[in-house]
Length: 270
Ligand code: OAD
Image (cartoon, rainbow, N blue to C red; front, top):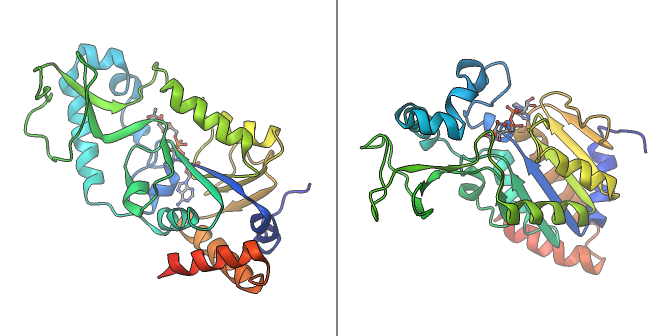
């Protein structure tokens, strides 16, 4: 199939899709004001990742690592979900099976209302005890104590995120691959699609016959694999696709599946 960037051409595929999976990256939160990792103003341009986001950095200088995370938590704390997050939250009620897999740790997908969500790289609002492994939610910014300590055992707490050199949670990753293998349609949105293993998910979906759609500010290595490529802002493109989908569902409301979906979609719009 030749690659297309026409929403009109995409809609018939979405109308038929029962299992839809979306992979998101830092680009979906860019319009909320959270810097991406590798763009022009990317976080990794100003800070050396190997100094801050590794287990070795944490062992040698937990204070420095926590200062960076405290700064990032403060930066994210007042940010709000944008139309990209909000559209993806609505899609849970439109497609019979819908899963969102994110590499983002900012929590904005949950804030937008997404519940069928796998956070592959953890969550910046959670901390984990280095000694006992207990995970705590903590939204206090700025942190009163750096580095923070476990309220239960006094051990050192670390951010509950995945660092360079660490493995992803194996159960979570297996589930992400299972969903990607089984879906009929996969979106890759706002990710440079170069960090593994997440970058393999859309490829796995495409290899298993799924329709792959890329939405990004610019082409990524997935561009040549995707059947649909939309270049621009996710917060503008996703609502456009959503509107076109709703209109098509209205038109198709005589079909039984369409009827169900239209009713749910209308409820979501309220
Ligand atoms: P990157 O910063 O690598 O890529 C962000 C992508 O979003 C780029 O391809 C941009 O072109 C695109 N982009 C920027 N603004 C956009 C917008 N408004 N709409 C659509 N696209 C936009 O971020 P990730 O791919 O998420 O891992 O990075 C993957 C992982 O690398 C992160 O989760 C993090 C980092 O190392 C860990 O911390 C483990």
